[in-house]
Length: 391
Image 1 (cartoon, one colour):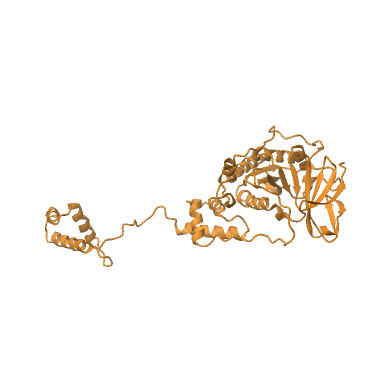
Image 2 (cartoon, helix red, strand yellow):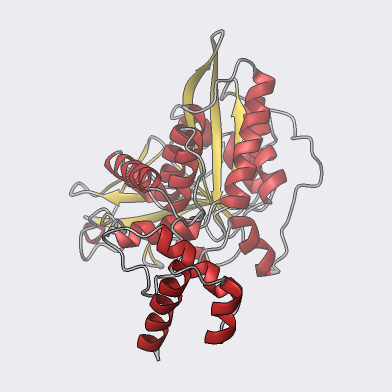
């Protein structure tokens, strides 16, 4: 059938060249005049390399939705740059980086993922090595606001210059973040920052922090309970202090801090405190509504919260309580510590000797304010108890 069609096209052109009318040719051969004109045009535009009478592909010469080679190369270079810096290097991070570089049009997230897969750029770094046999007392974080990781970053400087810090928080179950910039870490500023974060994220059951003095108080008065401890215990929140010199125990907030610096502080020039607060909230909203986590099966943090249908407990008022806060008379706070060969437990400057079996193990030292006791445990087994009168 195909060969007959080719012969009909050649015969029609031969008759047309002899001077026959298009109407006569079409009528006698059983084709429409439009068909004759089509092959006359194809014959007139013929080239030496193409057989004009043969069927040609109907595929369009240009696909307006096809990603250009320049965009593909930009995606590969951005991914490599982020990876080499030890930063987020997934499709979402690449999309934000392309936007900040002014690349247009920026492909969709599924398209970026396809390009990464096509070029075998989906491998991940392995995690930090942990010694075998030393079980770390990691908190469960399965439900909304079960655990928040919190950290201060800074100082940074605005144009002027104006020095500021940022108290960053992340809910481990949903990935939602809160960014609270402050001009100082002392007193009311820290209270305001924590309270502001809770007003947006909700009040957590546990908050995990490092051993920064502003969080626990003072080594001179180790039982005095600092700003964060008092605020948490007064609101039924349990603080957890990670081991000294082990920042990776707060790995989620540490990675977020890197993202905060590269995706926000280095991209936006801020010239005043009002603009700083406005841009911080805008970045927070962008992260919570657009960033997609693989651990959330591609959901955004806000979508994960919505689909969980879990209730969130918020502060009773928008205004933070005034500094100084009263001392709580109940509640618990915890210190996770790695005990070395000397068997010494350091609780914000106070030293306690533990039994030999505690050496080279992680212990949880819990201060029970109501009982005024210090309880030391290994894997939920009580190792020692000490009287701990609150001053």
